[in-house]
Length: 467
Image 1: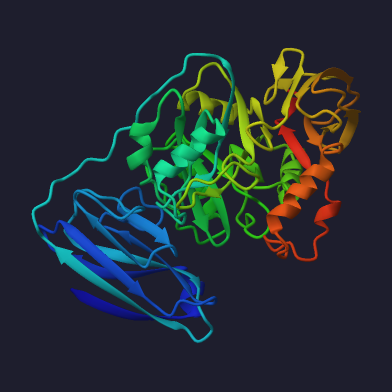
Image 2: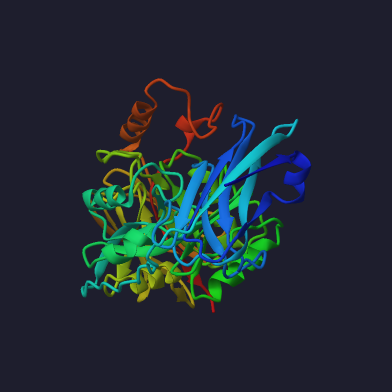
């Protein structure tokens, strides 16, 4: 056993928010236990993780052994098992590092003590679970949530509970994007099935912004420290064949890095009234600048340690809906890339489909004179069509089964659709008020005119105009 005490300051944090404490691991070690102690307070929060000797510094491809952020103050990893968020397997001899994330450091600095215990008792060497490839061979509209968490990062609930919540919500696919780690796949790789396909995800989580990585089996280095590191992240993801999505670009955790060549943007996270109009404004600006970004949504649900009943703040609020030729992870990823789908308020939320002739959402048409729209489940609400300049048309939705052809003149760059609450507005505001139970507004919404905000019920992906 060895205890190492360091004094961390705001100057350390400014130089590099990741602080490394090295320790030596001899050959034959089969288990490592680490405990962190520090004066945790509102202004003192230190994250925790580990790297083995293969770490080459940012951006490394190997050496990551776990991350728990501020959710844990201790972990173990062994050849046969590990704390959620940490990678079991071979323990390489040499210099390891405990990594401290200096998220919040008090003005006076703080002492942080790390205690390391090593054990060489005989243990099996357990492999990592292999990815599975379930397929439901039927074309159609499929529903899923592309952003949620388990106790492999900062949620309290086990993967089994999240699995049950997804089935309760009637989802077809689910992306589990735990913070800076991929160890949730110990459960989700073998449990993926044609009934509920699990999509590989990881949330790259820093103090300056969050992004989701999809469709990559390998861990992606999250240790970004400069605005330009967004382009490093983009390269790391794309060279592995994955997709990159910018998350919840709104208060309180907006994207402060340079804008990379992302594939998607999370335009809707959690309840609509949690600043999502800001994320949508930034998405609109990027489309207007000429970027092609698929719009997706995710609840960012942190599974509690019990199964919650269905309601406005649980899994799949909002839900992302794609047209798929079959249900499989590859098909979901392809639809995320192409944008053939929409985001709606819940698994039973309004259906919204736009088409320009034979060109579906996410596609490109050389010219546009009219748009075919199909809406279900939004009687009395308002259909709004938007191009790069702004609103180009608005139509009252008459009936729960509604289809129309809207003439479009001189649309610029793209056309997309929104369902804005009208008849349903008072009901939705009442649901939101009931969530607060008399408490002040969450998500730093104090002094914000939430009641005056338009409430979107569904958002389509754009159809692009031009070559």
